[in-house]
Image (tube, rainbow, N blue to C red; front, top):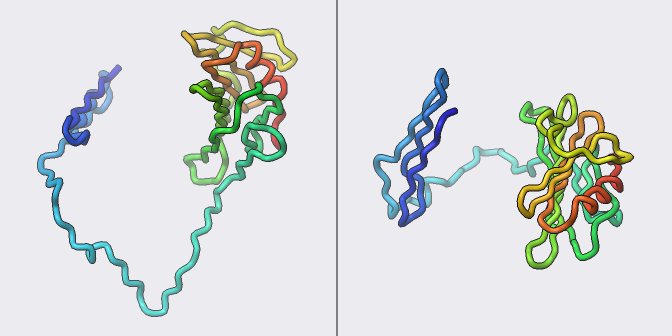
Length: 195
């Protein structure tokens, strides 16, 4: 296992040196700022773009954008191909959510997340991803729960409770610092895959 060291200028909180020492047989990296002028004067015209004659400005279209919505009565965001629970405990509201695309540039959504929040920092996080083979083997060491969902596992660490289940290659993790594993299971059992 390698190590990473980061040296930060405490006055400006700027990384001045980054050193990664790789594990045996792995690469090591080193980057260091050797000269830095924090008060450099930069000519504003240096970043001016003058389009060529006849050029037309157009709006950029993101062909890979996925639809993420929180309509339909659920407080969890909906992402096509992923779970969307219909139940959420009282007192929680939709915080934020989103999705993650494939690194291959083919516009596939490979991950989705939705955050429910309550007053005084309690939260419920639903994180999902496509994973060939379903639930990772490391999760199989967690405690198994009997459920209509089939394979469901939970784990507690301090105040954090986690619950994992899946369907095919979609694996979902519910995490909370404020509700019981029974409540997480109720959320999971209310979930359906979004067509």
